[in-house]
Length: 168
Image (cartoon, rainbow, N blue to C red):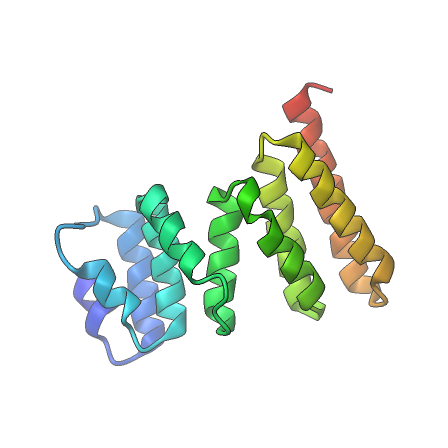
């Protein structure tokens, strides 16, 4: 599986092999495995590598992911957003706010879900409250009904999460 993730000619096979390898086998960071993944020709493989590396080593992975925040590549941006949603801290909130203002359509739907995940796991309730206000502001500007529904659902799930966190 490891060899497939590094050398198969088809990027989709490398991507799936990386995912399987990450979920089922111990990574050997004494090798240059991740360095090879980060130099892959496929942005999807690189994005998955960033995500899996952070799952394996959250401190180093988060630092590496933050270096990719301004990447113009959509698959890399999605991986960065997923990692920050799961591992980010209040200093990453401006990234999500910028994405709220930048994205449209289905990309915005994905962001609502990931921003809700991020805000829901934060212990800093001030950042979470500001995030709710940011989503509400975006919803007021939103003309597309189905995108608005996803945003409202994210707010409802966030309210349920935060009620549990604060014991309400």
